Amino acid sequence: MKMMEWLNSFCYPEVDAMMHTRRTVLAGLGLAGFGAAVTPLAKAASLLIDPTAAAGRCPFRLAVINDEITQDFEKACQIVSVDFGLSWIELRSMWNKNVTELDAKHIDEARKILTEHKLRVTDIASPLFKTDWPGAPRSSQSETRDQFHADFDASAQDKLLEHCITLAKSFDADRIRCFDFWRLDDQKPYREAINAKLRHAAERCAKENIVLLLENEMSCNTATGEEATAVLKAIPNQNFMLNWDPGNAAALGTTPYPNGYDALPKDRIGHCHCKDVVRKHGHKYDWAPVGGGIVDWVGQLQALQRDGFHFGLSLETHWHGAGSPEASTRVSMEGLKKTLTKAGIFC
Image (cartoon, rainbow, N blue to C red; front, side):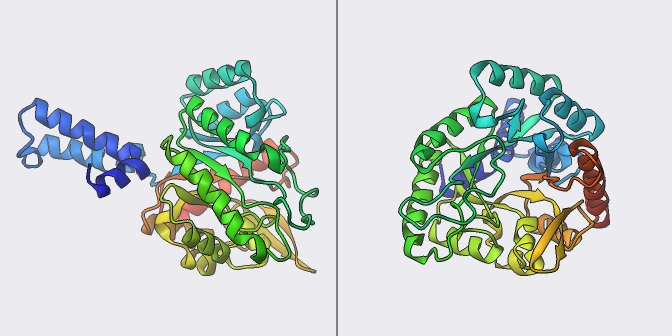
């Protein structure tokens, strides 16, 4: 297989499958040489080639992180599927357990619920590498952040990676989210070793045709678009991509769009989290519903569409101003959909 074909099949499996289907149909009809000249087949081919055309013209895999709604996984799936009308969901914790700590019975039950609600999984939102870097001074962030029912120390990370790979296969997902270790005051002495660890993890995932997504997180060493750009440059593996979170970058005091985003290699963005931020005095912040904060989500969404991004776009509510996680997520999803409309994107 030619290199470009391999990259397309790896990074865009749904498109590769569609192209294969189109070739098979045309060959079966004896029309492979001039299929484009046949109007009905040309229309069908346009749907097969363009993944947005077959998905209601939405260019993204619009989703919600399940535990932002409720720990009741069946209820979360019903809301995502029925109330929000979506086909994708991101898995982080359920039934008061992190997704990486579910037993076989719970995994089987979760799979049945997903099937019943016709939902596909964007990625496993694991806590991989959300821990202190061994040998470095203990980070001030290591005991203050929400672990979402998970707490794995540095010695458990290799085993956790293997388990995440198994989980991804169990849930028919092709992506695993990870982090860049708790933020150090000075990461320079450890940066090369950290990059080597992330590179090794990406190589392990590549053997299973899985994309490893590094999330920029304000409490971790990669927090901004500029920092993410440097790490992506140091780790050129094509299956090592960014889970771009403009809200996290804004919480640290930077301008995620356009500044941070403009620095990023656009073909290395493999997922995006949506939430908003309001700034407070003393370099503090609060979360806000999408469209109600300082992130230029209209511009960011337009740029993602313009630059060909078509992977998971997950609502990560975080804001609880409506009184409960479910109510707050409903408000924020409404804000996200209104923002998409303002951006001229219909999902």
